[in-house]
Length: 253
Image (tube, rainbow, N blue to C red; front, side):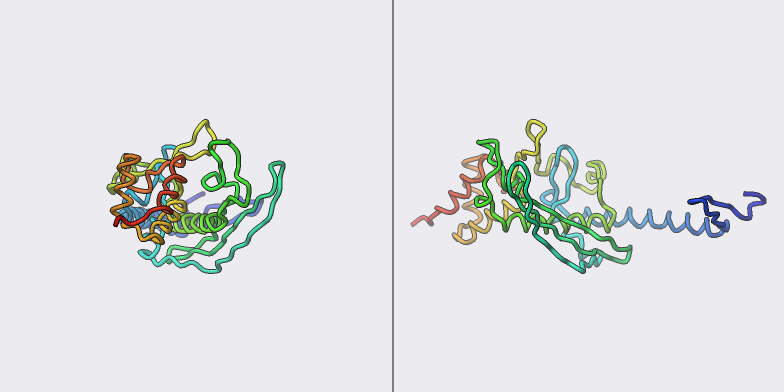
C-alpha cells in the first residue's frame, strides 16, 4: 500500500482492490460482533444451571435441556426440519442410524445443523457385563431417535449463537462450577460411559410417572440405595436395577 490509499489483495490469482475505509468498516464490524457474542455468552450461561451441564472428559458440555432454555432468549428459530433412518451393516452385523437436519437462525445469522445417533450408541446398546453390543431387538429405537434430535438441538443452538468450545473458566465467571455438575467418564479409553444419558433419565422418569411414584419416593430410594439424590448421578451399572424397581413399585398401604 502506498500513500495510504489502496491495498491490493491476492486471492486465487485475482487482484481485489480494497479501499482503506472499507477495511476500517470491516474491522469495526468484526470488533462489534465480538462484543455482541460476549454478551450473548453471558446471558446464555446465566439462563442455565448446573443440571444443564455435564463434565465430559474434563470439558463442559451443554445438555439439550440447557439449549432449549437458551434458544427463546435470542429468538432462535428452527426451520426445514427433516429426519431419516438409514439401515447399515458392517463386520459386527446390522445397525441403523438416525439423522436429523434443520436450519437454525436468529438476528445474528443462520446455520445448517445436523444431529445423529446410531443403534451402536453405547448409552443405549452396550452390554457392560458381556463387553459387547446388544442385539437390535433389545435396543429401544425411540431412545436412538430422541437422542439424534437432542444432538441436533444442542448442535444447532450452540453453533448459531457461537457458544461452543467453552472452558470451565468461561462458565465459572457466571456461577457454573465444574464440581457442581454431573460427570461423564470413559473407561479404558473406550466410549463406555459411566453415567446414564439424558434420554435414559427421561425413560426412568416416564416409568416412574406411569406408576405414579412420588418424586420424594424416588429420591429417597436413590439416596438410601445408591447414596445419590438425582437421576443425573445414576451410573450405567445401576440403571436397569433402578428401572426394575420403578416398574415393580407399589404404593404403601
